[in-house]
Length: 309
Image 1: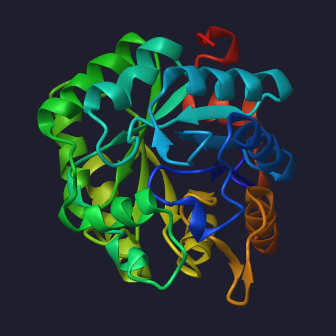
Image 2: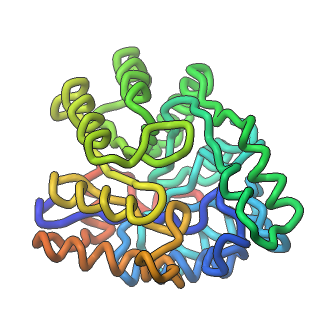
């Protein structure tokens, strides 16, 4: 891929935020599809997909909802659709990973280790929370986002069988060593694609020194046999890490899953608005969004005609 191009991922709705945090968070399948298509029109090459219960906005693993969303996006544009295997709080690994065998997507996320995942400080704010939202947020005080070696070995087998390119979500530096272990055992194919996800309470934080440390570690472990992207949780960290990805030859992720603001004084009204800011930022460094087909070639994806939705 031309080094002047950059792959922008848009994380459309997420599995840990709750609707009261922002009215912009898409909830229903129709809203998620519209938001994903809008993000692609704004410059997103990849859309990262979770689904929610349409009535409540609670994160869901329902395959019927996933099928409606994935097929709805596919009907309207050629963006790379990347469903989650991370899901949301309380979901089993079986529920989280079912999208791989059911839909055989081009890409999917693959979480590279366990972490504490704390959202409870959000629930302490004085907001008019729905009952389930307050409980959901407070319960993360004792929540461990579980991704054991047994879980990861299972996902390795599933992505290989379904010919899915995994995006390896590394929330901390130790996760890079987990990935190296899986590569050394022949369970993951190279080049691996790693997303540095920084800013979750319980894992590494979105400081430039931490991000560059993780990048140096990845280079030491994998040499040229990896590609990478950066995702910062919160504002302005989302755009700090986006700038790092742009400047240092990587890729980037923005979206309402990770950040609800387009500036310090303005809440984002859509995923497209967040993508537009990323596109403008890339232009300052003479980089422009890659097309989905350019990214498919870059990652070696099987193509949209080979998915099962």
